[in-house]
Amino acid sequence: MATITAGDFRNGKTFEMDGKIMQVVEFQHVKPGKGAAFVRTKYKNVMTGAIREESFNPSAKFENGTVERRNAEYSYNDGDLYYFMDMETFDMFPVICLLALWFEFLF
Image 1 (tube, one colour):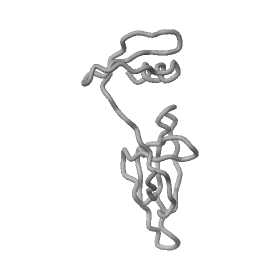
Image 2 (image 1 turned 180 degrees about the vertical axis):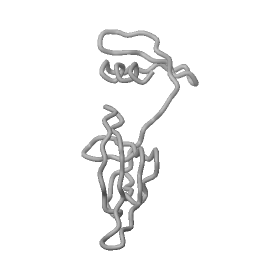
Image 3 (image 1 turned 45 degrees about the vertical axis):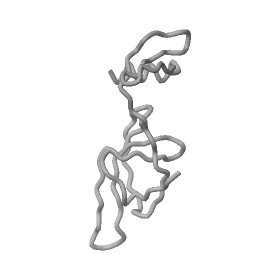
Image 4 (image 1 turned 180 degrees about the horizontal axis):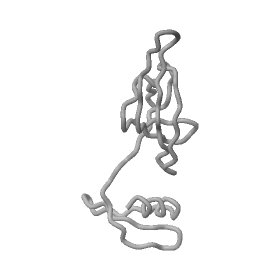
């Protein structure tokens, strides 16, 4: 997988940290008069929505995070699986119950 540096951060950019996918909410590249530059970053965990603020060295490396977004419509559930239909291809795909609850939270 491709790596990115903290200097590459932009709003909406996704990256992997500690095995979790994060999305940059805000970033600020700071160059103080004294000392080394750093990137002040506000990011959120894509799965839980938890937001954190942290400063990184601009050369800090992270794995590039990939998030696939699709327009889908809820069809039915079968036990712990919720089935959604892709509105473009009409393919059905199952989502595990915990993720389905997260989808309900978003919409």
